[in-house]
Structure formats: C-alpha cells, structure tokens
View 1 (tube, rainbow, N blue to C red):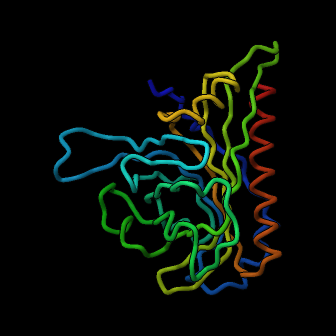
View 2: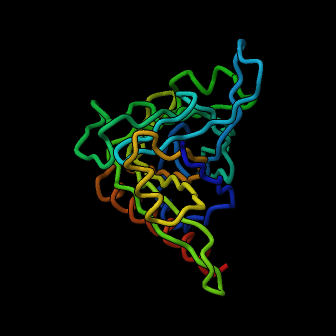
Length: 239
C-alpha cells in the first residue's frame, strides 16, 4: 500500500533582495522574481469530482497525478506577480539525479506552465511563460524534531535548476526547491522510495529567477534554493 505524505503548505522563506539586483536591467516581459507553489484543484469537463494534484515519489522519478497537475501560486514578486496558477509535469525515470542538459534539449521542457485562475483556464496549459529543467539533484531527506526532541516528521526536498521562457521568448535562468513532508521515519521513507508502489505525496515549493542568463547566476540561484531549504528545515526543527 502506498504511504501517504502530509502536505506542507506553510509560507516559505523570502529570498534576499540582492539575489535579484540585476532584475531591473531586464526587459519588462522577462520572467524575474520569485513565487511559491502548492497543489491546485484540477478541473475537467468529464471529471465528476474535485481532484487535488498529488505526487508519487520514487528513487529516480516523481509522478504527478494528473499529469500535468494544477498548481496554486502565492508569494509572487517581480513579473511573476501577474500569475496565480499553473501546471506541473512529472519527472520521468531515471532523471533523479540528472545533469548536463541544454536549453535546446532540456530534461523536462515546460516543467512549469504559469497562468491565471480559475483552474482550467487555457493560460496554464498554453506552453507560454514556462520553466524547463536543466539539472535535478538527489532527494535530501531529513528528520525533524520539536524543542522537546520529539519526532515531528521527515522532510524530503528536491533541488532543481533550469530556465524560464516568457511569452515573447525571453529567457532567464532560475532554480527551485520542491519539499515533500512525511510522518514516517527516514528509514521508512527510504524503503518507500525504493518500493514499486513509491511514496504518495503532497508538496510545496519555491522558485526564483534572475534576469542575467549566465552560468554563474544560475549557480548562485542554486545556492539560494539550497539555503531556503536548509533555513526552512531549521525553522521546523526549532518549532
């Protein structure tokens, strides 16, 4: 039987403004700033019920249901302020971890597709204003404890980097972290990831973009994404 992960939808830490110091140099249509994601409600003409986007984690892939699945965007800044919804695609096997892709041949093209509410609006599946994957890290798994040293859950984080493409084809480098939350101990999480059934999950995350499309900028964004992940983990430990 698949294991169930509890969603972690708390507000994510805010990125330091200096990360986006070059954003003002970008053209107005370039996608720069940051935003948070959480599961959205999927709307179809044939489904008689409401379905929230879910994920199943395996050691080398993530399957979203449905695929692509709806997203809710919050904490938007910069040019991302014009979006409040989107979709997310599955990461197929064996792409976790993976590196070495190019912008002409990304690991997952249009991994995120940004748009606007209501869910079901064509803007969240039009393949405009998107984020494509170039590099995917391995899962970072960490048990969390409260101030009385009582176990509170296990955090499963996945770091990503890639590039945003605006509706008028302007590119900007970006990175993000998707965090899954489990009530299982780390050993049970590892066993579930390696099992044929995988680990059922809800999720939250944060993505960011800078305007200068240089490798050093992309590396810096990756470091910031990692810092956000560690900061969030420490906050939960100290809660």
